[in-house]
Amino acid sequence: MASGLDERFQAATPLRRALNKVFPDHWSFMLGELALYSFVMLLLTGTVLALFFDPSMRDVTYDGSYAPMRGLPMSAAYDSALRISFDIRGGLFMRQIHHWAADLFMAAIVVHMARIFLTGAFRKPREANWVIGILMFWLGFVEGFAGYSLPDDGLSGTGLRIAASIVQAVPVIGTWLETSLFGGEFPGDQIIGRLYITHVLLVPAALVALISVHLALVVKQKHTQWPRAGRTNDNVAGERLVPGFAGRSAGLAMIVFAVLTALGGLVQINPLWLFGPYEASVVSAASQPDWYVMFLDGALRLMPPWEIRAFGYTLSPVFWPGVVLPGLMTILALAYPLASSWRHRGQGWQNLLQRPRDAPTRTAVAAMAGTFYLVLTVSAANDLIADKFHISLNAMIWAGRIGAVLLPPLAFYLTRRLCLGTQQQDRTRLAHGVETGLLIRTAEGEYREIAQPLAPPEQLPLPYAGWAVPKRMKRVGALPPPRPGFLRPLSGTRAAKQQHEVADD
Image (cartoon, rainbow, N blue to C red; front, side, top):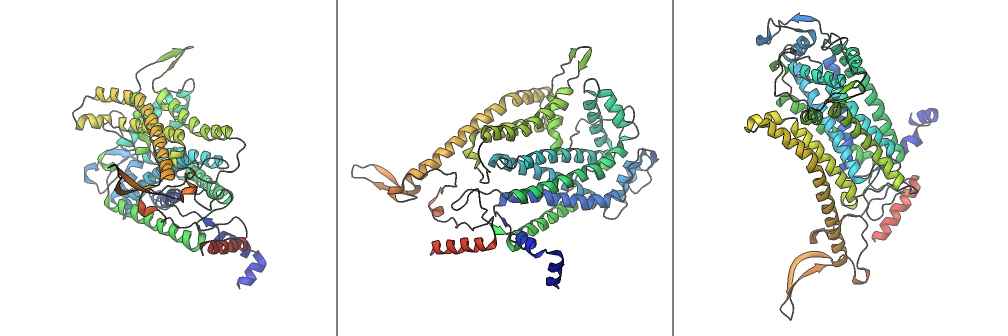
């Protein structure tokens, strides 16, 4: 039967090649799969929720199981969200899994992108995948905000009001954009239906397309890997797809599904029944969005009330943190790989990763950006911090403004010095050996520590090659030999393996 299928479809050779594809075995390469499996869970739970949700803003009177809300007028969207939570068996469970999966999906994207940036995995020929990652972050941002706004409760309505103010702040076309999006003046009667189509159709389709292109590029361009003896820009060392990589990947998928299921059943998130239906006149001071939107909320809170009038137009203070800041962040993130490629033009494919310490300026830039992001995120909760710790809210705002200006450059300087210092420590160990903790006393009465050289004296000092350098005696000679990968037919791989075994003997 197998021979007959192969005779008709000629699938044995490409299938054999795919099953023997080699993947590096470092744990950091699984961060992208963490995002992938979170997205799968989002699709599964979102499909179930879509069967019961009513994306309408028509007025209804609630008469469901939640007694405190009975008799209250509300939108059909909020009514269906309450019914999913209290009347549909397993509805609250599915809704909470969906929300936790969204948070994990965005967290995995951010951490995965940070790993790519810090290790230089965006370099030639992977600039396109870096651009895809940036687009996926913003699509996930829009997808999360749209889903967060669908229930039309008091908290999500406040977020929509803020979004409407950001749209209005766009010069010249802001008012037209707002009326077009909301079907009239805020809140209108169309926005929930439009967000629903965006959330369940447009953005998921775009994400599926980008994920497919991303995975295709990973397969086509081969994996990056950490530098070590026997690894070059022309090979890949690790484990084959089956059984090693496939087993680990399946295990990670089961762990992700299990953790999300446990979170959905045990840890409450977004209790929308506590917020009530949205009313424009009812806004809580403690209104915080999901974590990945908090940096934008914090930037809006920290911006001074400065208005700029020019050519008959007024630039609202909301325009700078709400429109200019995200746009500038995106442009800088997209431009960095291009600037790096131009600076190192003429170099070939860069398949070997760099340790963060070996690119001190790039690592310092990442620390600076992360510090700026963290200051804005904390500032999004400045009202809660001021209330809980009895601090002046005005003082919290000024602390955030000062921190946003001073802390990022400080983080840049300290991180760069730390990277250079750790580089120097590695070079010292390569030249003089690893500390043993053993002391000897010389004839002159001087105490000296015995160092374990990493090579015979005639080979010292060893060159610094960007590899991990042993820091303790127990690590000397403890690194396993690299497993040979291949970018050529299996016969070449067998020859490389035999050569490797002969070298071991």
